[in-house]
Length: 469
Image 1 (spheres, one colour):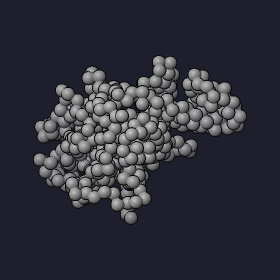
Image 2 (image 1 turned 180 degrees about the vertical axis):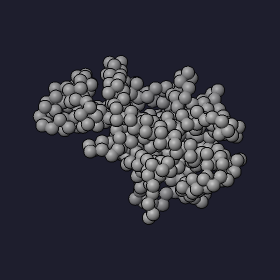
Image 3 (image 1 turned 135 degrees about the vertical axis):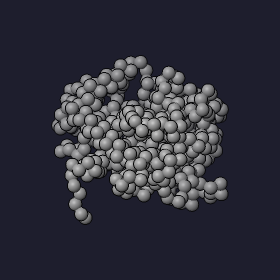
Image 4 (image 1 turned 30 degrees about the vertical axis):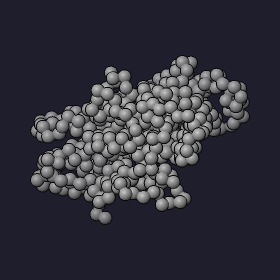
């Protein structure tokens, strides 16, 4: 029997898509369900393909293959599918008296939803990793002179915060739903279910980045000013309640916790696996960080079994891969169980921490050890810092050129600069549309690959001169 909380499992999924009309008929495809189509639309998209040349942690390209945003997203989707399957089976079994459609969704469709959401979770990230986000924020925070006066006088507070607090999570929703100058509305026309499963921080820019609220929703932001009405429609359709006392802050959709968990599991082990391939981290350190998890288990997850299998392998990279596979499997088992343990809080929108933080206390120190070591020895490794600095300079330089052109469209150089912007990103050159024109520039730059941004910056600054082609 279903218990009814603020949200309920019956309403938290729908095949309705962005761009659908009220007269929309059911999915006519007898082979692919609506949620499998979401996955396919993302994986075949140009925005997803561009992730192959966006930095995950270590600079690209290099002599040793390491993860980029695309390979990371594919692996997160694989883990997300497993989490979705485990949780979906548990919900279908617990509520076995519900309708066939209910059981069909949770048993067979939820894995596709979580996999699709995971596939797209980084699709809004700019080039050069998280430093790309910081570079965009820094540019708009440090505006001076006439540029600052015009932008601050024209944009609303929330619109300004979209740029000063630019967030890749919010940009993912925009990337997936904006029609980018095409006639048909809805962007990739994904289901509301998949889109809601991506929005980790369901709040506006001006109300986000505020940890003092104690709400996980306001840790960052999840939608820009331009997408507020869209998210309101998604929330209304799925029965997601708004948080009291706020203008645009909502409870998290429960499926978000699974998307987040898949990402949290992957980057904690895979970034260290890359570091091992680059000889930054030793095999002994990997064992030191991850073996304690198995010491608390028995059987195939127990430390004796894991040690025996690792020692039987010859190649150190293979040993790390085995540890990685076993640890991911263990975490999927633990976190899917914790999801069901926290069902009431999830449906009431009151679980204010991620699933990894729901692990028993004895795991907290182990996770903190991984976080601390990764921060000190991986994320602050020299080549990682170098590319972050390069990202600041490149993205800041491109923004300076393009924003100046938007604000001064009649200048001769400005007209030339704006010709470089793809027609996907319309520039009206009208002051009353300044917010949307700036968004088009940020859309253009955030969608670039690392190498394209480098190439364009060199050509625009005269570091290299393009040849006729």
